[in-house]
Length: 120
Image 1 (spheres, rainbow, N blue to C red):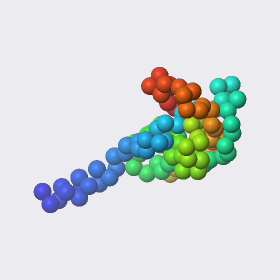
Image 2 (cartoon, one colour):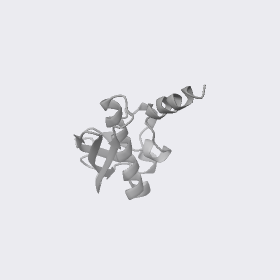
Image 3 (tube, rainbow, N blue to C red):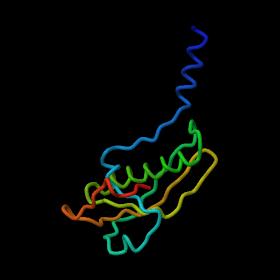
Image 4 (cartoon, rainbow, N blue to C red):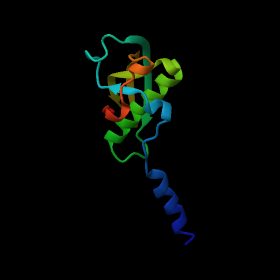
């Protein structure tokens, strides 16, 4: 049993999950700057990265990088930000870096029903 415990810890540590705060989950991710956000107020640039260590596949790393972009937008622009446009995703040996722009598109009652919106 004592010999299996370290192996269990290694297996547990190598699993991954995509994490995000509630505030970041409220931010809509657009795969590019499009007509959907052309009339929005541009708040500014944001950059985030996600480590590939312990991840099972690159799509998971890409999704975590997008989620981290949401987190950075929430940290930098607070309650102002409600949308993020991904400008580019750079894949390196052990990480992925996401660059984007933060936007303010909705005000209070004009917020769309988040249950009906696609997350990216």
